Image 1 (spheres, chains in turn green, blue):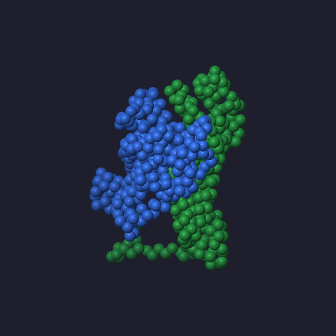
Image 2: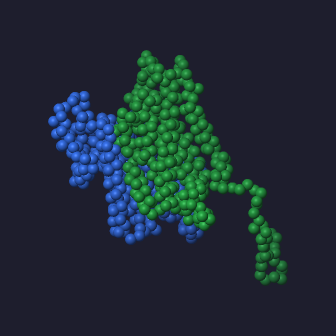
Image 3: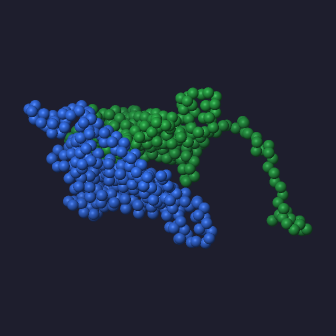
Length: 316
Length: 309
């Protein structure tokens, strides 16, 4: 061990180690500027879960857009003579009670689940961002009124609310009404998250700077506050897409969802209930399709949350 | 504390009025005549229609109808189902069953969720932790009816351990399988919550102090880490209890549990609009009250949280 003490010295005196000031003050100007989004992207692309979920989602979107690429069997062409027959002979997964091809029905049902998910997410995000931003940014009576309004919608469990709406609107049941029924009660969660984040951001120095140079309030909200508080909204939106898909299946399963003529995993699962003992794959297979879809969106949501929230990253 | 409770109760009033109004509005401001629908294909004489309308206050303006409905609720009158049975009577029959099911489910998810979450949190990044992170992710993605059917198929039909549906009187041994199914929904969340909380607490100064003054791991883990990590978990369990009291519609329907949820499920299937509304109203009331209690529980559990007077 190297020693700094000379024999004559009674006490150890540490050598003065001064960091040169230049090194601290210098800014790496030529380096790429980083922000939340580039950091998040760097974090995300290292995780296998991101690539697995993205690949699954791309596959699901392709299946939803071009179902005929994956099957040439007409899902509505059913022969009772084939009722409950197993796989084989031109059918990958066998037939259901009505003698329809299970595989083909799963492929053609994809677009229903995905469109409900997307419409609900769009609805929830726009209502949530609109009300959350107004409540958080303007405060005062606007906040009081909007927050109470949110409380009212929030305190009704949204499956129960959707059940009421859909049992009332039963003759108008379609992808659009079911999305409306789910979305109209799901937005307060998004609004609350955004409101809390805006309350945190709106006292930042850059907002004061923008005010000082005379930027209008509305422009500050849109150009400066919103982009800096949108991260948690993106996380909650990805997860709400998954829960919307589950909600559609649950409502169809309860019999207040889409009309039975619409191809939907929820409808297929609902109709297969009676065959649980005799032909369980009619029930299990669409359930697997549903679960894999939901899983891929939830996985993506987790990855995005970990990337955008430093606290979640620390706990990993 | 008393002031806080009073303020919370006052705040709950507009929310309560708002929710009941919303539900009432959704059903009664929609197109279609419920009285005509009551007679199905037959066309009743106008006098009969008139009499029915008068009896159910349907001849009054919407807002008066709503106020009468509200007055009824405050007097414990939740309306009458299509079969002529008062909704409050149906509630009295079905509520205890749902309560038992909810308690059983919360117990199951509490015991397993906290145990697994604790072990995962203490050995963060280990093989146990990693595998349960994957398991919890899969459990979160499974819709409840899928879990219910798989459980019914595997444990009820293939293995024959449980009866697939609940028998008359809803004995406890029949409720175990639906309770396990209900518990799987929140189990994953509790594992994650406990894990995050244990990791958080494990890094606190008082845990290091306890270790440095020579306390054994066997004392630190239950007394210092676990107890302090449980506050968010207990609150979550309480909220979940509220959800189970109102939201077990699907599971109760599948397992034929004679509780509140199945009654709602059957009312939906039969298209009994008014019963559905009465039930949903009652459920929302229960949900609101439980959530209020949860917030108060939070203050009792965590002395750092003091609600201002």
